[in-house]
Image: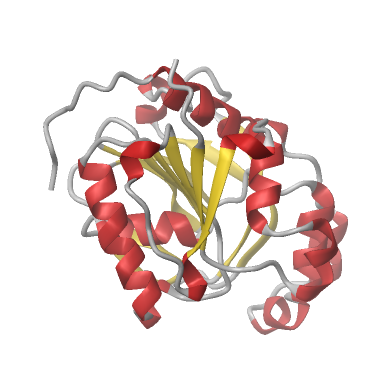
Length: 248
């Protein structure tokens, strides 16, 4: 077991109406079953220095209202750091913006989703490769997850395996190498987080042809998606320190 703490890269803040529940690292830590002393938070969006990733059992990357395609200095700096971290075989788990940033870092393509905004409790469908994946194996072929995003991973990095998709997004999860994962959905969201985001994005949902009230009413629990964070923590704790062949 690797007893080192987990590093959480904070790439953004929740919408104002949800900040009474804390920031994204807190939501992730609680969902992952980690104690506060088991995590170190680095606010990369506001210029914090990136530490040596080898000090940590694994790295989690939060969501953000920013866009990867804007190529902000802090984002590109974080992407370069993530690229090296993944090549060094440090366990990585990117969420939403973190998922897109990881894909971009490893040579994939991120852009606006041609299907438009995806919001609310959605149904994920697992790809065949998920049956052999350390995090996704044993899960049902379809299960609920929470999502709120405009951009997506249009093309995964070379050598990556797509693990899950939805009717509006062809890449809701991927794994690159042995232990670098990205998920477009939000496993850290509880139902009150998801409802709050639907309300906050109601105008945008309407512009994309959706009905925020209907989406909000349809929000339901997504325990299997949430379980993935604890699976990542367990996998990272147990992972071997032995290097594997680099990709890309």
